[in-house]
Length: 89
Image 1 (spheres, one colour):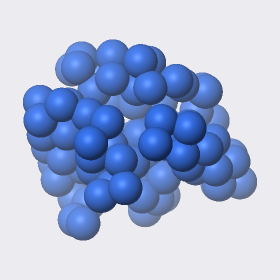
Image 2 (cartoon, rainbow, N blue to C red):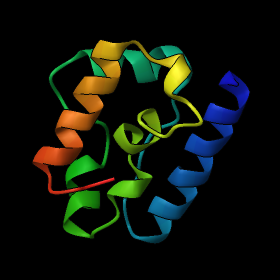
Image 3 (cartoon, rainbow, N blue to C red):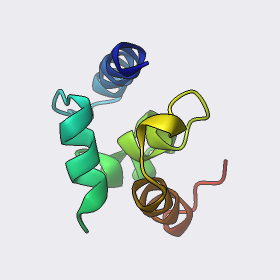
Image 4 (tube, helix red, strand yellow):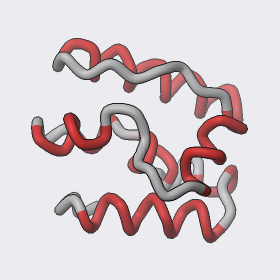
């Protein structure tokens, strides 16, 4: 499942790049660190401005395909960030 998450993140990065948003590569550990902190992921604010939050790390973390990879706290933080930015699942 971790490999599928990394592949999905890489695909999201490619799509974000097409919209002019650069995001760095992350492994699962890096993704978990981002979601454990108080700062949003790379490109989150730009993706929000462009209406493309579905490409964010936060959206991927709450995707039903990958929720088992994250703790409740990490998933809740991702969901909170998304909702505060006006993104609804």
